[in-house]
Image 1 (cartoon, rainbow, N blue to C red):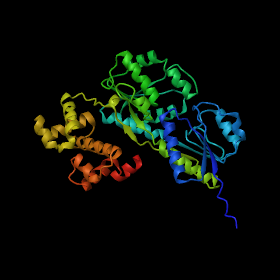
Image 2 (image 1 turned 120 degrees about the vertical axis):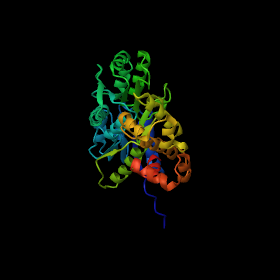
Image 3 (image 1 turned 60 degrees about the vertical axis):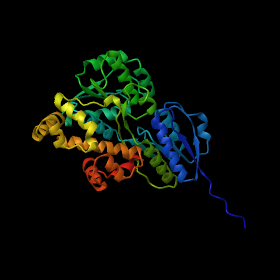
Amino acid sequence: MNPSKPPRSQVVLLLIESSRGYGRACLHGVADYCRIHRNWQILHVERRLNEALPEAIQHWNIDGVITRIETDDVMETIDRLGRPTVDLRGSYFPQRGATFDTDHAACAEMAVEHFVERGLRDIAYCGYPGIDFSDLRAAPFERIARQHGCRTHSFVGSQVDRDAMVRELLGESETNELGKWVQSLPRPCGILGCNDVRARQVLMSCKLAGVAVPEDIALLGIDNDLTICNLVTPLLSSIEPDAHRIGYEGAASLDRLMKGEQVEKHVLIPPKSIVVRGSSDVMAIADREVAAIVHYISEHACSGLSVEMIANQFHLSRSSLDRRFQQELGRGIKSEIDRVRIDHAKALLRYTDLKLIAIAHHTSYSSAAKLVSAFKRITGVTPGAFRANWQ
């Protein structure tokens, strides 16, 4: 008796750009799914996000598609294939499939809280008006900022084009307009760029206009594309979307679709965290003494610092410290100490494999249990869940 043939590998067409960090992270997520589920044959077509698809695609023998759809033409071509499709960009909805996207409102909320924590009450948005992902971030950013009692500002600009890649290129010629805009903003002010490219354009305009970053303008991007964030001065702070998870879960969704199963049609994945770098590493505090104490806390919070020690160091009562911190930051001095310690714990959870007891030691908690309790109280999740989500 002849041994039975192994099942035919399913051919999956992968149409995801690798020119940007977001696309590369999506590809890594798909690759990780494929390593676990070995019955796929990947056909990866290297292309730019806005590039037309090859005409021969209609004749390829494929079983499913994972893509990032940027234009109507690409959407129509994909639909004509008649194959299960998962889109990882979120603006188009394949006839036979699902779409995954970053949760833009969650990005906006994260950005507003980042600025508010730094004492900023004027915050601004700089996007590409008319571009889908930019507009999806602009509206919740303004709404959430107003809920926090902030004054909001936005850059409109004169360029108009529906193609995101073209708008990014046109944005390079808006230096003078952007420079005049940042000069018109009240200072200090926090600015969220709709992505890292836009934030870099704002940063360059600030330099040319003589506006200091982060002292006058605290700047934040979205995507955490290291080839952008690490090639500017100061280094660019950025919100890191969970593009790896989007790629992995998108691949899992396609697997179910190719088996004839039902899947959720539109999935939003929250961002991972803010990677704080020099462009937003500032505290906007009018009270000079409170500003000095905040700086002192940032340097000594993880060395066993207490409110009593600060009160003695600066010759102030605890009640006075709490009142002045509430006025300037909207939180008490103990909360500021805890915030710095937990931020350091987050960094150790992300970038090291230290056990909780070691992290507790590095952040001045007397035990792992006390670290877990404080971490969950402040962040809403346990350190273990935070580390798992990051990885």
